[in-house]
Image (cartoon, rainbow, N blue to C red; front, top):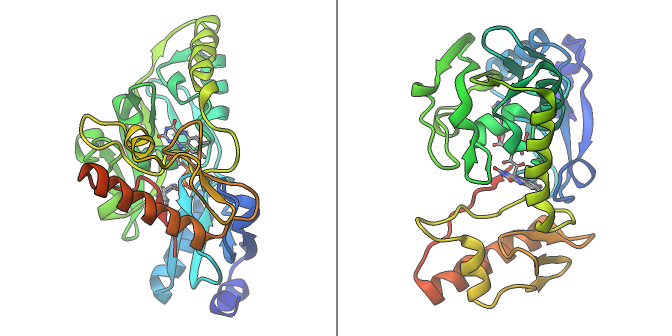
Length: 291
Ligand SMILES: Cc1cc2nc3c(=O)[nH]c(=O)nc-3n(C[C@H](O)[C@H](O)[C@H](O)COP(=O)(O)OP(=O)(O)OC[C@H]3O[C@@H](n4cnc5c(N)ncnc54)[C@H](O)[C@@H]3O)c2cc1C
């Protein structure tokens, strides 16, 4: 806490202790300093403070695609979870902290279709825009018009053409910036038809593993499925401590209860090495490592 004590003294934004073991979808990691800004003004305040004081910070949504730090960290984790809202004018806009599930409910109520493929993805819309989340062959970038980003003390709108989107990639991975909101290209549809589409997409996810995970660990190499390569290397069910490669989908690593970050990292390394040994394919992580 000392690292950020000064922040507590100068700001109204409560500094909290955040337990990644409870809060991340993978269910492991240490206790860290965190803030949950309640407005964009607060978000700007905390980002400016970190920049000015040269403190490390990391903006997170639902922590569903990240491997948390094992223990203490000198990073301030800034969660967007309280920055929730959407508008449905000419171009629908969604705030970064809104979950895909909550946004899809709003879309259904407003008769706006196009984002249903995100049904069941446990993400915030900011996290999804950063990761270029996708499911069933569709990616968020296909329906993005622009992304509103705070960087270097300025709020800027990046049209999709400047977001450098490709498979599980965005410009924000290299160039940084805090995603505030996303503007989307959606079409008019009846709420009934939207509900039907959502249900269809949710149904397709029924075979995905349950249990605590980060979703897919690796990106699919060109023309191949990472899960199939891992399965082909005989790694399904491979266990290290309480972490294991899912029997249902080999690209998922499951925390059986008390897996540590170290065990999961080691298991990822073993999987990468085994797949390389068998196929000469270098798997690349989709998940992000937090420090
Ligand atoms: C069970 C399960 C199923 C999953 N299924 C899918 C799937 O079908 N398709 C898919 O694509 N993914 C899937 N995922 C992975 C994950 O949900 C997505 O990658 C999602 O986009 C991450 O969103 P998040 O809000 O949790 O981001 P986080 O995990 O919190 O963050 C991910 C990255 O985005 C950055 N980030 C987050 N918010 C912001 C912001 N506002 N500004 C700047 N940077 C930001 C973070 O710094 C981090 O680097 C799944 C995960 C789980 C656990």
